Image (cartoon, helix red, strand yellow):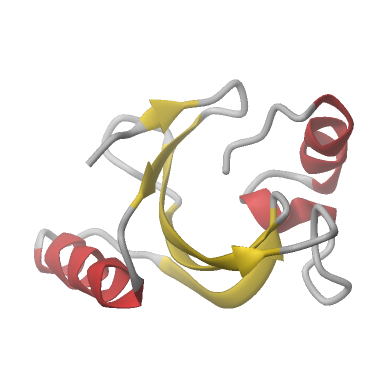
Length: 102
């Protein structure tokens, strides 16, 4: 799985589909890591199924996601600018500079 680190202190790992998201979430849960589930969320110009591991052992946040479809907007009305796991300020800045965790 290709993983990339962004400037907003998280690791982003894309996977092939929602089944792969579920499998990774189950695998990490068996290791004792808790996660925050986000399904059908719009973030970073894409509708995604994903989850976050906010307190990963390395001190970073981990994001595992799959893109369901493209979006015309950076985030959805219900998701808000904090859709990328950071604060509203961080994500709003990311939207304007196209540097985000997702």
